[in-house]
Image (cartoon, rainbow, N blue to C red; front, side, top):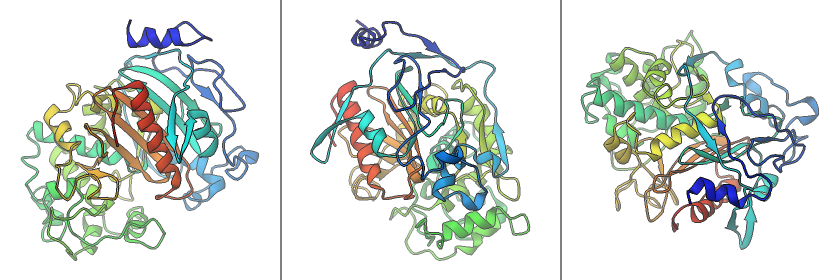
Length: 429
C-alpha cells in the first residue's frame, strides 16, 4: 500500500484524493476545523481576532503601521502594496501537488501535554499552515480571513533562497569561489569591512562585523532597512560602509545580521548582471513549477532587499522546501544543498553552539537532530521546516507580536518533531 493510499483509507469522511495545481479551493469555515479534508480550509477568525482587526476586516495601514497588531494581518499578506517590489515570474504551468484525504489528527508533546494541530492553531496567531510530504499535501489551513491565493510575507526565510542562488551562480561560473571577497565582485565595496569579507563568512553569518539586530526599533537593522528605502541616501553598497568595526575574525563566531545577506545579494547582482527577482525566477521559481508569481520588495535604488521580504503563496513555499528536501532536485547543485544545510559537528556553527538550540549552515538554520533537518525562519513566526529523509515539509506563516523569542516558536518546533515522528522515521531532538 502506498503512503497516499494509506492516508486516504484512514479518512472516515472522504475516500477520494485529488490533485491541485494553481486554483484556489472554496471550502469556508467559521472556526478552525476543515469542512472537507481534501481541500484547504479557511477561517475568518483566529486567536485574539478582534485585537488583530477582525471587526474592521483586517485593515491595511501604511508601512509605519506594519508592527501594530490591528494592521499586521493585512500587512503580512499585502506587503507589495505598501512598498515597491519586483515580480518573480512563474512558469506557464505549475507542477502538480496531490492531496491526501486525512483528518490531520496528528499529536505532539509540549509542556507535559499531548496536543493536536487544532489546539496549536487555537492558541497562536497563525495565518497559514501547510504540511506536505513528497508532493502530497496532507494539511492546509488559513486563519484571519487569509486565502490560499494570498502571497504571504517571508521576512528572513528568503535568505535561504539567496544562498541557493549563490550555489547556482558558482555552478555557472559567475562566482568563482566562496573564498572570494565581496569586493572582488562589487567595486563600490572596495576597502570596506563587508567588501573585505569572504563569501563563506557572509554565508555563515560569521563576518565578525558589529551590526546590531534586536528588532526593537533602535538597532542597526532598523536604521539600515529604513535608510535603504530612501532614494536620496546612498545605495546599499555605500550604506554598508557605515559598519566598519570588526569585533571578531571572520569564520570564528556566529552573529546573525541581515547586512551579511544584503552583501551577498549585491554580489549576486554584480556577478550575474541580473536583478535578484529575475535570477530567482529563471533558476528556481520556474524550474520548480511555482503556481503563482512572487514579489520581492526593493529599496530606494530599485534593488531587492536580499535579507527580507519575498511574498508568495504557501504552496510555492512548500515547493521550494520540497526542492531542498530532494537535495536540489536537479535545479540546485546537490553538493551545494547538502553543504548549505549542514553544520559541522564541533564547529562554531553547530546546533546548540551557534545558538542555544539551532545551528547554522549557509543562510539556513540547522536543527539538533540525529539526521539532517533544517529550517528557514523569519521574524514574527514565519517558518519552513524540512526533513530530507522523509521528504516532509511544514510551511507556517504568522503574525506573532514578538519578532523573536516568542513561546509559540517552541511549540511550533514541538509540533514539527511530532509530525516527523508520526509521518516519518523517528527523529530525536
